Structures are given as C-alpha cells and as structure tokens.
Image 1 (spheres, protein in one colour):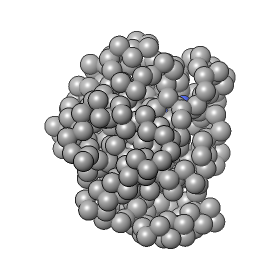
Image 2 (tube, protein in one colour):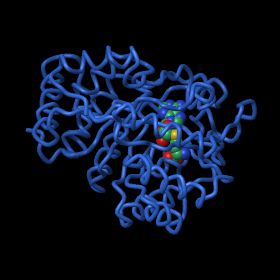
Image 3 (cartoon, rainbow, N blue to C red):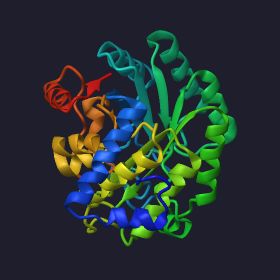
Amino acid sequence: MYNNLCQKDLIRLLLLEKGKDLGLLYQAAMKTRLENCGNAVYLRGLVEFSNHCRNSCLYCGINAENKSLKRYRMSQDEILAVAKEISQRGVKTVVLQSGEDIKMKPLWLAGIIKKIKRNFNLLVTLSVGEHSKEIFALWRKAGADRYLLKIESSTPSFYRNFHPRMSFKRRLNCLKALKKLGYQTGCGNIVGLKDQSLDSLAKDLLFFKKFDFEMLGIGPFIPHRKTLLARVKHGDKNLVLKSIALARLLNKKAYIPATTALGTIGGEKSILDALRAGANVIMPNFTPQKYQKNYSLYDGKKPLAKPGDKGFENLKKEIKKMGMIIL
Ligand code: SAH
C-alpha cells in the first residue's frame, strides 16, 4: 500500500488529519522501522563547539547578521573533555556541530578527530557546513565517519529565499562529494518555513530517497527573535511527524533523529511521538552549559538531557514502555 509512493501520494498523506488513515500511516512506519532497523534507539552525543558563522540563513539565530550574539569557539581541550564524558556515559557517537566558522582551521579539526578516535573509540559525525572536497577528504582521512548537511529545502527556488549568497548547487555538490568519500551521509529539511508548500515538502522526501541518504534530520522551523523571520509561526508538529513517517517508508534503513527542534515545540511527548512515527535516534546535548545558551539556533531551544541525568532517565523509561531499547 505504501510502496512506490509518488509525489501525489505523498501530498495526500501529508494532508491526513487525525483519524484511521493517519493511524495506519504511523503503524506502517513503525513496522518498517522494526523490520529494517530493529527496536533500537541510537544515541548521538551532540557538541556545539562553535557558533561563529559566515552565512546568513534567514531562519537561523546564529547567522552572521546577529551582531548581539556572544560568539564562542571551544578549545581542543574542552572538546576532548566533552568527548571523554560522552564515552564515559556510554554513548558511542560524538556529533561535532558548528556554524560555518571561517576561522576554524581544517587541520585543527582533523587533529581533534584523530585524538577522539585514538583515545575514546567513538564514531565521529561532523556537522560543520559546506567545505571543499579536499577538506572533506582531510577530515575523512583523520577518521570522521559521518557527515550531516541538511539541504533544508530541495526546491532550488525556495532554497534561495532563505539562503542569501549561498548556492543550492554547491550544497548539492557537497553532499555528492561526501558520499563519494565514503562518509555515512545525512541530509534533511526544515518543515514549516514561510510559504512552504506541501508540494515542496513532498519533493524533499523524494529527494532524500533518490540520494538514499543514511541519515535524515527532519525538524520544524522555530523562529528566533533576532532574525527576519522572528514573527513567523513555528512549524506544525503533526506535519513534522507525518514527514518522519514518510521518510521512514521511503528510506527504510535510515537513521532518523527525533530532533531537538521537535522536542522544543512539543516537549518529551513529541520525542516519543517521533519514535512512534519511525524515528530511531536521539541526541543528548553535551555542549558545556556556559556555551549552550549562545548556540541559539531558535528561541526556547530545549537541549535533550544527558544519559545519567534525571530528564534522560525518565525519557528512557518511557522509551522502554514503548518496546524500544536505547543503545
Ligand atoms: N552550519 C552547519 C550546521 C547548521 S545548524 C550546516 O550548515 O550544516 C544545524 C541545523 O539547524 C540546520 O541544518 C538547520 O536545519 C537547523 N536550524 C537552524 N535554524 C533553525 C530554526 N530557526 N528552526 C529550525 N531549525 C533550524
């Protein structure tokens, strides 16, 4: 029934309101996840190590136009200390995320990747924006395993509305280069951007399938008070959940996180709802407290608690009740 979903099918399913058909969609997504990925929820330890950024993405609170933001860049020692904590708390992947920080030296990051691999035996995911093939290759050689680069929107004309001075083609070429270098590659979109059509959301889902991405981050747009989109309403939680379910049906084996943005608009319940809709990754936030508030992609950001902390252990219980286990 959900095989070979085409653009028209996807739009019809994205339009579903509460009721039997919507329940069936979530059930199908759950079943697909169970058959292809088992009942595990994978943990990824997130470190937001720099909020410097050269870009001006209209939705993003750390964009270069935000002059009132206090900028930071963690030192190598700080990052390694966090990596150590991540491994001590039983998490097997560290995600190093930052803005497009032009002062960050590629060799500096390569050194950190090498040390993390050598000392802590963690898998390393990078999420540091667009760079040249040579730099991607350098980090891959240093030991980076995965790379996240969301396309944000796969409709070039729509992408352009939100990304002044950036190029859709360049972003796409980055994704292709990452795949070629053997990174496990993650993509994704933002749901609920101003004037986004269901047609364009459906295209995003087909785009993810076409490139067969191994990871898919799908989250709601949330406004940030210091951006041009400050007064735009946040994305619809149910539309995000439906997108996650459809992404699962199309990319059966993908790692799909219950994103922090989703947790921000709907709390713990929406994290659980995302897992019920086919997601299978959660990302506890390990960014040191003193920096966390300055990695303000959007207002009200609610970082997910770390394993061992109360908030996380409560969530873990709920996840167990759903019949899933945290790995
Ligand atoms: N500079 C890196 C990492 C960006 S931050 C890169 O370009 O890939 C990680 C993600 O946060 C982005 O890909 C974007 O999808 C998301 N994000 C940023 N601002 C947001 C907002 N206001 N609402 C929802 N998601 C947002």
